Image (cartoon, rainbow, N blue to C red):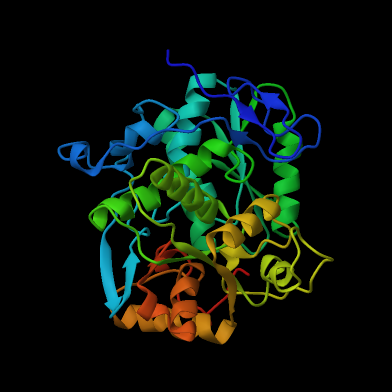
Length: 373
C-alpha cells in the first residue's frame, strides 16, 4: 500500500502520522497541514486520462480511489465579457465539496474506523454522507439548527445519521469534535483535515487545463472556512513552482456582510481574527462561519497573492441569484456571492473567474421561505 504523507501543525510544527485517527494538533488543537509538495504533470500529458479530478494524479496524496463518483471536470462558461463561471454545482452531490469529500472517505476507508463523523451547514455533510455510503462506512453528520431542509433530507437519504445541534455552526462543530475524540472515530473534517484541501485544489488545476495552461488574473472565491480558497492557493503554488504558470493570480475572498469576520480582520490590517464581530442571519448559510479555524492561513494567502476581501449584502445575494437563474444557472444562495462581488467591483476587465458552488435545489430562492441562515 502506498505510504501516506505525514501531517504537521503549521503553528508549532508538531508532526502527526496520517495513518492515525488524530484530527488536530495534539499540542495546540489547531488544524493540520500535509507535508506534500508534488509536481503537476504538464498540460500535454493530460490527454486521454480519466475524465474526473483523478486525472491530476501527480498532485493528489492518495492513489486512484475505489469509491469515485466521477467528481470534477465541471464546465467553464462565460457569464459576460471578461467573466467566466465554473459550474461546480454540477457534481454528484450538487456542490464543490465532493472534491474534498472523496479524499476523506477514501482515507477513512483505508484507516477502517468504526464510525465517520462530520459537521456541516449542509453541503460538506451531504458530500461526506454520499461518499461514506459509497464506501460502506457508517456516518454521522452534525448540523446547526436552521440548516436547509433539503440538505438535511439529502444527508439522510444517503443513510447517514443526522444530528441537529441546538445552536449555531460553531456549536455543531464542537459537538462533532467531542465525538471525534472517542476511540476508533474518524473525523471527516473539511476544515481540520488537510486531505480535503488537496481535493479542493483540483478546482484550479482544472481551470488551468480549461484555459490551455494559464490562469486568469483574478480568482474570486467565497470564504467561510476557506477550504476552496486555501485549496486554490495550494494549486497556484504547485503550478507556479513547477514553472507551469508565469504569474500567480490575485485571490479575492468574498464574505456575506452579515457574517464577515475575515473581511473585518482584513480591514483592521490584522494577521488573525480580531475581537468578535456582530453577526446576523444570512442567506449565505454555507459561509456563515464566525470564527474559522484557519483564519491566519486564509488572511495570509489573500495578502500574499495581492488580493483582497469583499463583502456582499443580503439584497445583492437575492438579486444576483435571480440574475443567474435568468441566465439558465440555478445556484444556491451561498454559491452566488462571488458573482455578486464581481458585478459590484466590475472585475471583468481583469479576466475574473467565479465558482458556482452549490445547486439552487438545495436552498430554493433566497427570500421566498426560511433562509436557513
